[in-house]
Image 1 (cartoon, one colour):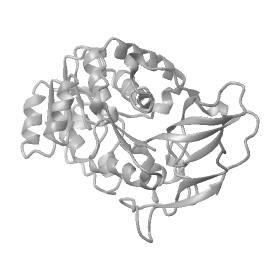
Image 2 (cartoon, rainbow, N blue to C red):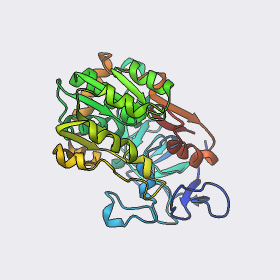
Image 3 (tube, one colour):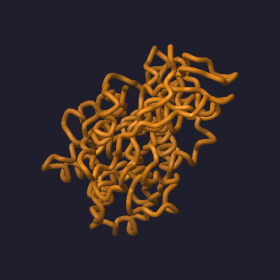
Image 4 (cartoon, rainbow, N blue to C red):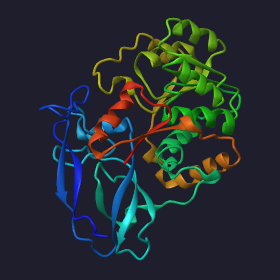
Length: 350
């Protein structure tokens, strides 16, 4: 088989303000073909198989955020769009990795093929119960680690706690629901999602209650469902949903701030009318990044793998949304994250 010498790639053409544009003269991304470097000792040639789609990618290309406020270097105009991914090794000059192996790496980027050093990849091991390796991008990747450390360490969740999770039908939120109920054993777990169907799925994962935030009765339902108070909030959304949660928090409640996807494409959208509750209830709000726990990642992965093997954590059909597309459609799939078009982890399959 002739090995590729060139690769298609999506590069950042213009840093967006507001919602990224994926077609037309002002497109956020531009399709290019670039020459691949020669394979050197210690390097491998990969074909991209799966790409992770994550809300954090929006922050990496933002036109207004200063670089010194980001936890990773921003993507600059002309650079390939970054993405975690899984690839198949086509050729290897590494003594550690053989051709044919499947590997996961923190940044394969939106590229059809890539040449990378062998120390930047991890060879994938089979998962319990014959599960797809794509879960290494979700439940057993940064998504699962975010859920575990955000709830257990930042949120200090305990069995007697009531926990509320925004974005509960998403990749991270759906894992938080299961960890809270089935690993920590929290007394009451409440999810928030965007449709009745998603809420039914969240409840099937173990939530005692899931509320549709688009329902006209959402605020009243939230009051009734959390009548005993909320000890821990795992917040993936920010904005008005978080504002409605503030009055439901118990004294000395803990809020693990994971993300704020409601405002990533709408600057200035967060206006908190209930901020006084943060003061009056002495709430602790702690932002966190999963990279803070990189040194302990394997510990959490071992816990989650065992929970999966014991069927405490269930990774079913809706735990990931895998979208098989051509290379040209990569930006379109990513944009679905901000439109509520998925349950669980959104993955691009090439």
